[in-house]
Image 1: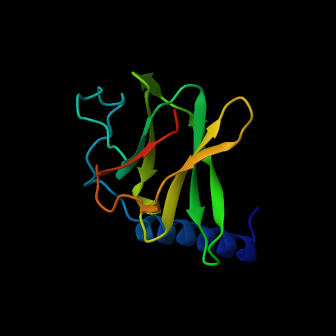
Image 2: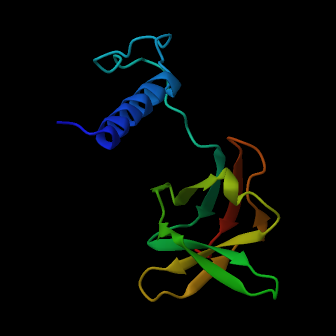
Length: 147
């Protein structure tokens, strides 16, 4: 048998549940969710914004290059991720191209350094240049190696 205290507690609990039900919003106005993912579209993928730096070197045989940046003290520091053999060599003209993300655009000076692959001696250094300043811009640097 229920006593007065337990029946009061039961009524209070029932009122509490009723209050929660009345306060909790019902989102009946929301559209139904699709049960399957939407089909793929032919929309082009977003490409990061940026540009390219390109080296064209005359008299190339078996060399490789690295890009360096100049710090505030005037020291040249290798950009380790921009170190490689030439992409192509045709008729003695070597070509190397690197992608430059727009977040790297700025006033810092850079230069190309070309090394002999057999002994890693510096064969040539380009004049300083700046990275692209506009989307899809290519900054091309040309150098000539001794034959």
